[in-house]
Image (cartoon, rainbow, N blue to C red; front, side, top):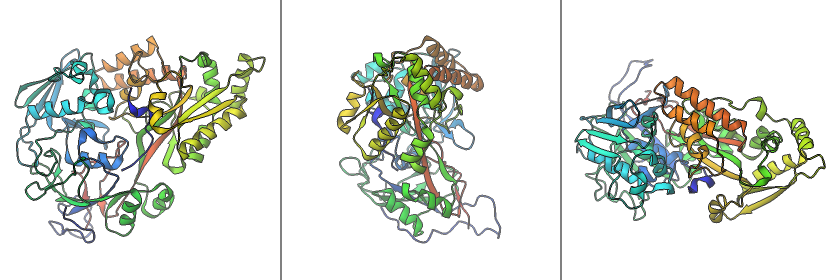
Length: 530
C-alpha cells in the first residue's frame, strides 16, 4: 500500500539576483508579441531532488524543476488541456490499445549533446517503475506487461521493448487509452548517463552546463547549490536564453526574494495569499492536483448502510470546514477527480451530496428509531492542522446527532494503520500524478486494487472504468469516466473534503507563463516583456 494515503504537506552554481540579462533584440515600443532572449529568474523552495523519478508529486517546486530539466515521451499542454509530442515525435496504438509504438524524435539530444535513443527511454521508465508500490510513479506503471516480475527483481521490464534506436514499443496488460497522458507526468522524464556533477544528463528544454558544473547534488541526491543557470537546449525553440534557479529552504524566503525583485516567480506562503493576490494578481492561483478525503472503512459493520454513510456526508458543511481549517490554500472537493484535470466533472454527486443536516437527521431517525446511533471514530495523524480538521468534522457530526471519537496517530504509524482494517472514518490524501480522471478513479476504487483503501467494490464501476480505458474517442472516454465517478459517489465510500491550490506570483514583465494543475509550466512559450 502506498505511503501516499497519508500525504498532506505541500511544498515547492553561478547566478545572482538583481538585473536581468539583456534581450537579444530591442523591440519597438508597445511590442505585444514574443521577444527572444533574456532569463527567467525562478524562485523555488523545499527542493530535495533533481531526479524526476524521485520528485514529490505534492511539491510544486520539485515538479517545476524536474519538468524544466527532463522531458518524457509526451507532455501535457496546460493551454489546450491536451497531450502532445515531446521526446517522442509521434505514437500509435494497436486496435486493442494494448501495444503502443513510440517514435523518438531524432533531433532530440541530451544537454551533453548526445542523441536520445530508445535505450535511454527504456532505462528511464524502468528507473521509475522499479520502486513499485512504494511510489506513485512506480505503481502507475503497473499496467505495463511484466511490471510485477520486474519489481520483484526481474532483469528488465518486459513490456517495454527497444525495436531500434528510435522506436520503443510498450505492451500493456490491458487496454489503456490514456497511456500518452500517463507518460506526460514529470516522473517519467527521460534521463541520460550521470557525470561528475551527480546529475543525469537532461532531456528537457533547459539544462546545466555540464562542462563547468561539478557537484550539483550531495551524497543524498539533494541540490548542492543555492543558485544555478540553466541554458536553452540546442533543439529547443524557447524564447528565453536562460532560466536562473534560486533555491530557498522554504517558501517564505522565496516569496521575500520575489517581493524584493530578485526573482520573477515564486510560490506564496499561506498567510500571504490574500495580500499577494491583491498586490500582484491571481494569474498563478490555480487548482493543484492534491486532494483530501475522509474515507469509510467499508469492511467495518458500522458503515454497512449506504444511507448511514450518506447521512454522515450530508451532516458536514464542507465549505465551512475548508474555510475554517485551510483558508485560501484549498477549495472544497466536490467529487473524486481534481478540478483542472482534463475531463474532470464539475460536480458529479450534485444535490444528494450537498450539506443538508435536516435530511441527515431524518435519515438517522429512520435508521436508528431508538436513538442508538453508533459512535464514529475519526482517524488521522498527529498534526496541528489535522487536529483542527478532525475537530471541525466532529463538531458538525455531533450537531447532527452522530457521536464521535477522535483517534490521532503518530505520523510514522498512520500509513500502516490506515490499511490495518482497524480504521473507521479515516483521513487520506491522493495525487493523480497525470492529467486524466483515471488515476483518481481506477486505483482507489477498482475492485481489488492495491490502492483501494476503503474496500469499495462495484461491478458497474469496474465496467465503466474498463469502458473508459478502452475508448479511443476523447469525448466517449470522458463520459465513461464521468459515469464511473457518479456511480462511485452514489455509494458514498468517502467524504470529499478539499483540493489544494497552487499560489504562485509572477512578475509583470513575464509573459505566457501558465501554471498547470501539477504546478508546472511550459518554459518554451514564456518570454520577457521589455
